[in-house]
Image 1 (cartoon, helix red, strand yellow):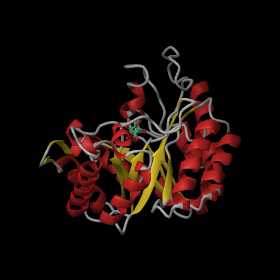
Image 2 (cartoon, rainbow, N blue to C red):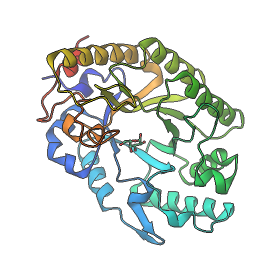
Image 3 (cartoon, helix red, strand yellow):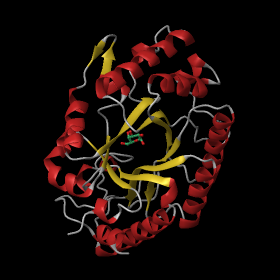
Length: 319
Ligand code: GLA
């Protein structure tokens, strides 16, 4: 069977996010993927929970695997409202919080070395229509211009790394407009943002291919590099609690067609896209089996529970 990463070598890297336990699929991963993201292991809260105490072992194992298999590592993530230890915010002034972020970034670089790309900031834009920035501790402590500040500090500590902004629902026009507004302002101020991570947690229903094209064009028009950073295609309506279904031949065909159409579009914008990364490898490992409905089976990826290629895999490879 031809490998995804080889077929796509003329276009972009093919990545996957995974955890240590996914290394039981080491062969499958090494065959098809040449980019990787630690699903959790490099998040702030995975590296430290107490002042001065850091653990790197989980991320180290994944990085070692990546290096041994010639897989590029994409860093994920430095500033986020989730999975971040509370202690860094407690009684912190703006100056102290920025210093803490500086030390954290320095440690991460000293420990792991330089990455080509890193998510500096994750999900800072609010979903609700009438609000712009998400209300977070970072915003509250550092103030309205916190995004420029954190990018600058991170860039000083990681000068050789392209820094990305990463977000979801990035193809929904209203949210997209807010993300574009923020990115434009950063670029106008000379803030070192190099790329946009389009998460692409999408479904077989939404968004339309036209909206996807428009979104890629709008982000690319800012002069940023793009990564499709967390791709999966749910078989349920987005955000709804549809009852559990099984992967019938009909649903598998619809999903495969959508994957096929999506990759056709992505290939046509390949000059803007550095990598297309799936959030997981096999359906059984997907976070969508727990979210938004705990225990509801989903089938959002290219490989089934046994690591066998699904119809979607063949469609993505068929061009
Ligand atoms: C977000 C984050 C990821 C991951 C996924 C779900 O999109 O960026 O790190 O937590 O949600 O697993």
